[in-house]
Image 1: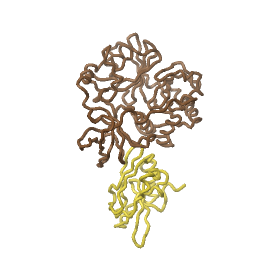
Image 2 (image 1 turned 180 degrees about the vertical axis):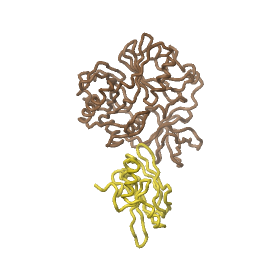
Image 3 (image 1 turned 135 degrees about the vertical axis):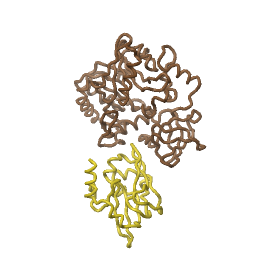
Image 4 (image 1 turned 60 degrees about the vertical axis):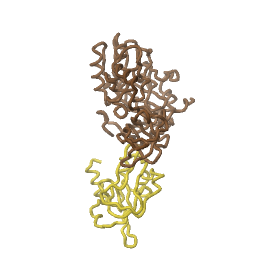
Length: 135
Length: 352
């Protein structure tokens, strides 16, 4: 059982997470949605993602998630070029429910501005935010 | 929990919508539908009054029998869809949608002209649906009333279930065999608990609003407020079978006769998405040439069929099986195809 909100991730108020790694000097963020988002969505039936090579901009919509009950937009936590897309989600959208921080990741982005990370929440701040929202 | 017509109701229980959907299709789903409205029509003129208030011929009912109908405005628009149960020649009960209970009551009272007594029993009536192929087997463990003899759209008012006095009706809103149990509102929590226990013995589950919607959509049962409203007529909605034009008059008959003679200009049609995409209420429908053709009224995944499906109003030329449509799913045109009849039809009754 993984943590509800792992400490090594960045979070947004739109309920996305980003795991940032250094790859030969280039910061790459793996992006997905949080356990809270998954609980709100319910059973995910379809994930619509951009393609590798496309760019995303922080706070802009980069895709959408269809659950049984509704459709929800995905917002990019950071700006950059998409270096990888979790293509197995096309056939197995349930990974998002089952394992949102690992198998359920959505895109990997090569950061164009690492300063954007300063604006993101850490696990404690995200949980405080959830608590303030009455969740 | 979500606000639903003044009630706080769960979209799903902890197992999730898909789990609840499949449990209802394969075993039993238990639905708290206490939000539904119940009106008692009583007095010697109750039957003839109701006949005038709804489109289906309630005067053909016998005691302990029920029918599905709509009530229409003079111009033919649907006030609500409902089930009418006949308890006795001078006593009928209607079950109406929860969100429209107040509107319906006012409309019935205004149009009955005092010809019979109309009493709103919604607050003191509990209603729990027990639906699925194992419903009869599981419910029979709680009652001596022989359920096998209770046919579809029948009602018994003298049953005892788990020691509680209830009415049992063989009706529902899932496309499955099943029952709806009416009880005193104060008995509803105890009845709920016992029904859940009985359901659990056959791997049944409580079911929230989310799966209630996917189940009814697969069975192509319309939802008032989404597929039906004050501006749609039963003929447009494919509910011509509940409109009995001959015989006694009813409100809306002249308008519906005129519409039947002239032909409808739009029809509620079911479609299956043939490309990747999910249609939702309010999305635009286009024909194969790209011309705007109507709007989606209900849509979403069909978990039993593992397809995405929906319904919407389209011109009659498109309302035929095989018609190609495209639906604007958030800026992307996604292909869909019209299909006839229910998306899901249950197989024959489970053998005990």
